[in-house]
Image 1 (cartoon, one colour):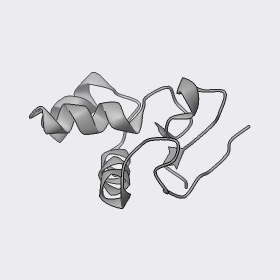
Image 2 (tube, one colour):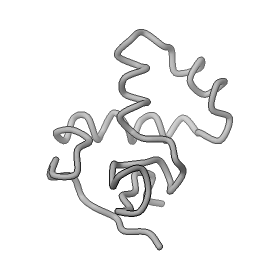
Image 3 (cartoon, helix red, strand yellow):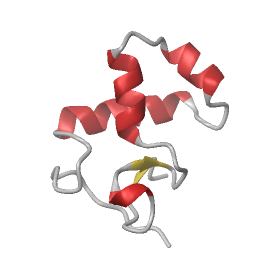
Length: 76
């Protein structure tokens, strides 16, 4: 399963989680601000622990911008 998707017609082409309108950057920002993974999962019941791990992987790979160099998955 591709947990991080990029669709040019969704969220301005920013990386999102499994095609939902939850941007990877927003999850990374919450973690950076001190939110605990369990808190994020409680606030976003559609997310799974593996989604948070995938977001952290995006951060490690160099960011969440459209030209960040991460592998792109186009969804329809």
